[in-house]
Amino acid sequence: MISKIFSIILIIFISTTIAIDIRYLDTPNEPGTSFFPVFEGLKLHVRCYRNQTSANINGPTILLDAGLPFFSTAWATILEPLLIEMPALNYSQACLIDRYGYGFSDPAPFPFTAQEFVRRLHGSLQAAQVNPPYALTGWSWGSIDMQIFALRYPSEVVGLFTVDGTDPIWGFEGNQINVDILTAGMENFIVMKQLDQLQDAAVNNRIQLGYGYYNDADSIKFPTNALKIAQQYFFTNNFLNTAIQELNIMVPSTVMLNDTIASLNTATPYKDLPMVVLYESLNGIEWEQRQVNMSNYSTNSESFVIATSHFIPWESPDAIISGLAKLSTRIKNNPSTQFIKSPSISCPINI
Ligand SMILES: *[C@@H]1O[C@H](CO)[C@@H](O)[C@H](O)[C@H]1NC(C)=O
Ligand SMILES: *[C@@H]1O[C@H](CO)[C@@H](O)[C@H](O)[C@H]1NC(C)=O
Ligand SMILES: *[C@@H]1O[C@H](CO)[C@@H](O)[C@H](O)[C@H]1NC(C)=O
Ligand SMILES: *[C@@H]1O[C@H](CO)[C@@H](O)[C@H](O)[C@H]1NC(C)=O
Ligand SMILES: *[C@@H]1O[C@H](CO)[C@@H](O)[C@H](O)[C@H]1NC(C)=O
Image 1 (tube, rainbow, N blue to C red):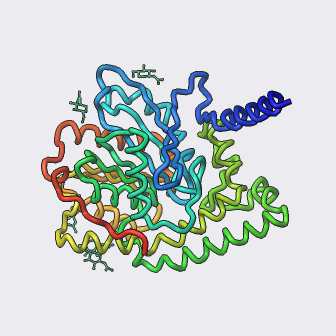
Image 2: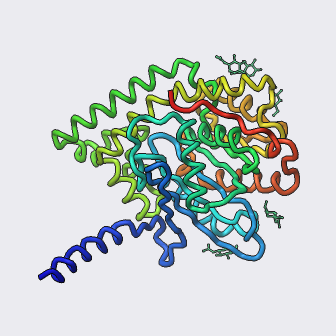
């Protein structure tokens, strides 16, 4: 009897283990490995893809942080081409991050500022032994995390790549109204979920992509495994609550980052850090100027523009590969001599 109970427990245990046998790509030998470091009580999911040869074994780790309310699956479109280029570009691995509450990471017990997230991300990477040097890559909101990371842990960072990245000025540009609109939308989805209407709205294309649900037309370039994970996750309370939490730290987090940069009292806070800025041309001239201004934060940067929407990871994965190639060239030919020796900036944490 006891052994029967034991084996039932064992089966339950095994099946929950199997439930986190994650696959993003459709290729038979999916080369990803997931890490679940626990830092200060919370589990963070970091999924790394390696194609190591003698050429890139010591190369930097690319860290990829997605836009809001997206997570690690948003990068699935770039993995196959990136794996092929990785040895030639001297990147040892590409690691995708699920911010708290998304994908396979624990939810945050209360909203974390980007500054607090970055502190925990750093501790989690150490716990998982996902080691520096890092080539930080942020799409949209992820670019704020990555800029904070660079300032706070400069000795571990060899490059920064922003993909239509949110800039530190964003919080001053009247965007609280957009936060309020998106928050109301997410709150409405919570009600629809309770009324059992959310699934129907999603599959009938009544949810805009900006809210985080990929309908079939948006998903053409996605590996089916990653798409399935992303679509299923949209319907969870964790997702909807996390999106609301995150929306509401956007303005304060960017304002704090801008204050941190202002306190350095220099036009080039990222010194000579190799930096690449990729942005879209469809969001107006002011956005473009701010992107160029952000690239000027480093003396060792370049920017390039493409005609797509903000959803670059799946509209134009090639542009991301090309940006990572540009960054690799800069890291190789013109590595930082000053930035990596800058003092770590103690960014404010939770308020
Ligand atoms: C690859 O990157 C590592 C770490 O930045 C560096 O030490 C090494 O020399 C690089 N290799 C090549 C071939 O550029
Ligand atoms: C690893 O890189 C090599 C060299 O570019 C490539 O031929 C191979 O297909 C890559 N492996 C994977 C799993 O993509
Ligand atoms: C943002 O920081 C810059 C310095 O980097 C400063 O000149 C500017 O006034 C700040 N913006 C706001 C709105 O405070
Ligand atoms: C770009 O930076 C310049 C110089 O700091 C500033 O005058 C200009 O207003 C900035 N552009 C935007 C759109 O913020
Ligand atoms: C920013 O850098 C570009 C070159 O990328 C330069 O043409 C421009 O004058 C710079 N803008 C400012 C405000 O420094």
